Amino acid sequence: MVRRMLNIECSVLMGANLADEIGPNGLAEATIGAHFIEQGRIFRELFHTPYFNVDVINDVEGAELA
Image (cartoon, rainbow, N blue to C red; front, side, top):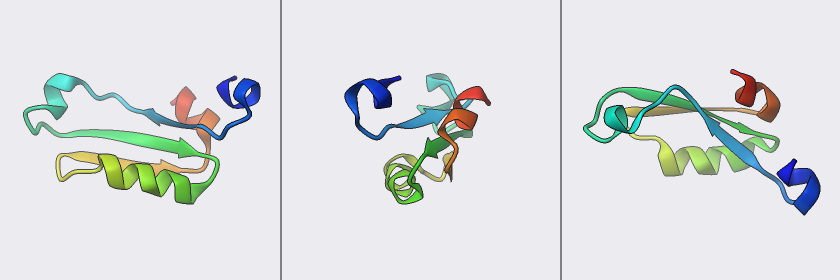
């Protein structure tokens, strides 16, 4: 909806992760859904750590549903 109304590209960060797990270096994971995989890889570089694994897929809607 944001992409359609504002006419800008959007990506999503989804996952079963909690601040209690991410903050004290607990293991957590997330998936970035991006229409353009290169854009998703930029976000992965920003968020990925040894304790917070981030994968990228080119399916925004699928990432939101997972």
